[in-house]
Length: 419
Image 1 (tube, rainbow, N blue to C red):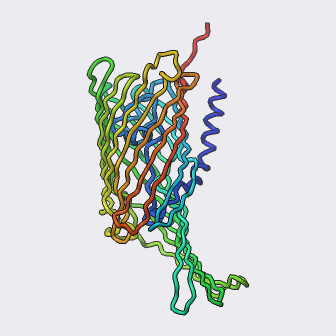
Image 2: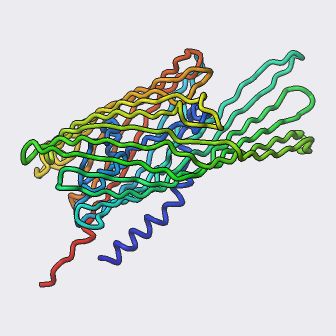
Image 3: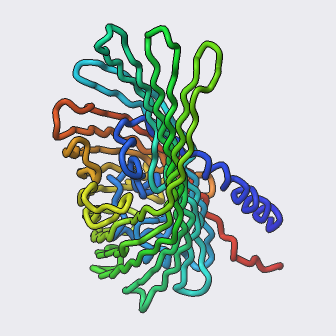
C-alpha cells in the first residue's frame, strides 16, 4: 500500500512541468495589457461558492486563498487537488460577434500535516494568462489596405509553499512563500495588399521572475458543538521582481522569403512589481451541513510599477459570496451526501484601455461528489461571467467556464495494527 502511495506521489510530481506549460487558458483581448488576465486563485470547490476563502476553514478542502487554513488538515491526512478548466467565450465588438473555446490543466496542490496543529501546503498555480489573436484592416491613402494581426501568449506562474500553525484550536496563522516566473509574448504582423508583398513582424517578450510572499490569520469562534464562525484576513506586501524585455523586428518578402531588414533590441532596465493586497472574509459553518461566507479583496495596483511607471494600472476590488449545503452526510442516498454549492462575485479591472477599465460580474454553481472511500471528492463547478467595459466602443465579453477538480484525501500517516 505504501509503495502505491509513493508511486502516486511521484506521478503527480512528474505532472508539474505539464502544468507550467499549460498557460494559454484565455482568449480575451484584455489579456493584451500589463500582465494579462489575472487568474482566479480559488480552487475548483471554492469557485462554485463564488471564490470565497479568506474565512473558509474546511479539513476536507485545500484553500490556497488564506495560508492560515492549511493547519485545518487532519493529523493523519494527505490531500491532493488537481484542477482542469475549460471555457466558451463570446465577444461582441460593435456588432461583430465571435465565439471561441479553450481549456487546459490549471493547478496542482498538496496539503499534509508536519506535526499536531502544524500544516503544510505545496503547489503550482497560474498568476495571470495572456492569450489573444485578432486582426485590424486599415485603408491607406494610395487605395490599398494593410492587415495587422495581434497575437499574445504566455503569462505568470507560481510555485509555492505554505506553513500554518493552529493555537488553542481557535487562532491560526500562516505564511505563503512562492517563486513567480513566466514569459509574456506579444507579436504584431503587418502585411499590405500593394505589389511589394512585404510583411513586417514585430515581437515583444517580457521575461520575469521573483519571490513573493503573503500572510494569513483565521480566528474560530464556536457557537455550539456543531456550528462556528470563522473570520480570516490576508496581507501581501508589494513585491519587486526582475524583468527583461526583448524586442525583435523583421521585414521580409512573403513570396521569396528574402529578409530585407532585421533588428534585435534587448532591454533589461525596467522595474516591475506585484501590488500590496488586503483580503478579509468570514464564514458561518454548521458541521457537515452548511457553510455560508463572504470575502472582500483590495489590490493596490496604482502604486505598483509596470515598465518602471506607476500611472498605467488601477486599484482593483473584488467582492465574493457563496454557500455550500449537504442534505445528510450519513444518508444511504448518494444525492443526499453530495455537497451543493452556489455563489457570485463582482470585481473591477486593474488595467486601463484607452483610459478606461471594465467591470466583471460572475455567478457560479457546482457539486462535490463523494467517492467510494467517502473522503475523496470530485468537484464540478460552473461559472457565467460578463465583462462590461466602461468605454462602450471596447469589446463586450462573456464566457461560460467549467472546472473539474479531484480532491484526493488519504490516511497516509495511519498505521494499522497487526492482530
